[in-house]
Amino acid sequence: MSEPFVIAVPAKGRLQANAEAFFARAGLELVKPRGPRDYRGTIADLPGIEVAYLSAAEIVDLLAQGAVHLGITGEDLVREKIPDAERRIVLVDGLGFGHANVAVAVPQAWIDVHSMADLDDVAIAFRLKHERKMRLATKYVNLTRNFFSRHGVTDYRIVESSGATEAAPSAGTAELIVDITTTGATLAANGLKVIEDGVILRSQANLVAARAASWGAAERAFARGVLDRIAAQARARAFREVRTRLAGCDDAFIGEAKRRFGVEAPFGGPSSSGMLTLHCPPKHVHELTTLLRDKGADKVVVADLDYVFASADPLYAKLEAGLGAAR
Image (cartoon, rainbow, N blue to C red; front, top):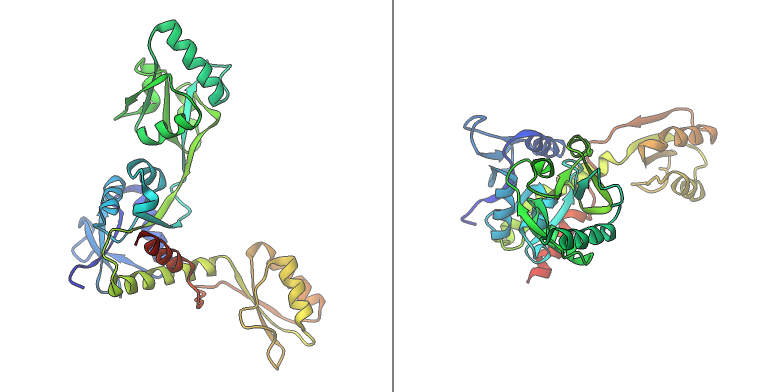
């Protein structure tokens, strides 16, 4: 392999901090050997992997070109900037941060507009009255056109926004907008509301793979090493380890615990000495420990898990399936 395996991460702000924390939880420490202002980094203890710090939009462009192997960016940008996304990238995993909705917002004064059907009626009436189409300000041109087409709304024209989109109606440059929102507070502060069926996309930060990148044996090995750690940490976060000695424990008892609390028995039933290890969702830990003590356990130990590695890695399997579909 002559070129490095490249992972692109956001270069600033909360997304960068969240991305670095995400990798760190999986034991993948991102480091900048030449100092904090460098836009190139590595992963500690994993030579051969290069980390590129870029804007979220640049990451999407490079993923589409196959110039990086993996990247962290918002699904909203992926869907907007790569119209044929299913053919060119693989959404490997939603990361649980960077949540926001791409949504249609109209003035709160439009009290009779609650749905896209209502908006269609208003758009037709607006064109007949003003002899022009409603103006819609947005940065999400492709997502907007596709969404409005699905709802049969045609009497509008897009005004591409490069600044504060939510201010366009009050500034008189548009009648409505499509923008990204988290709580809706900024929209409300500008006299806007999201219509009831107007959420185009519920977005979050994703770990994305580029199908057009070089994916030889070495690149796949790097990807597997990274994704295996991420999957192991995700499994660990989903459970607490519960250990006890329980005389007379049988398959029926373990089956009951699985049904009631969603536990897993990673090593099967109890050992010959009666030692039992269960993995339990955090919300059911106390119920499980109560059941174990009611069944005769004297001491029950509960511990956090760092990693749970398994023979099957769902993230790498998803990557392989996506790359195979691209052939």
